[in-house]
Length: 167
Image 1: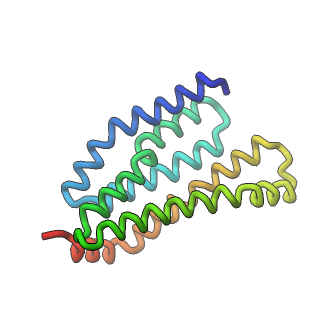
Image 2: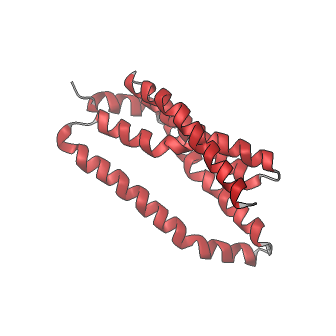
């Protein structure tokens, strides 16, 4: 891919994010934060998976659209949800904890890449591009796992968020 093609894909994701961010904000304002976060995480997972298995430029464009509609807004959604649903005396701690958890996960993931790449080589995956695609495809598991847990614990999360809601 050329630098221009990569730029176009990035622009597609950014445009999608700009278009749906107000819709996610409205969902948060109407008390539908769980649904908004679930939609964003699901679309993020799907976009990472599609990007990993993409065999044509059109698949990459589709993945960029999905990323823009979902994953690009996920961190903002979670931070907004936590900030709006927690009492001021614990808000800073909760938001800082989330940010620390997110950063730690990103550091660990990047640190484990060489080991994962070596494992793929041991398994006989010699092509560098294929190893990269497999790595990107595995990325979707984080968002997919989060979305599945939210679905499984939907009632508990709803009760907990109502208990934490500001008056």
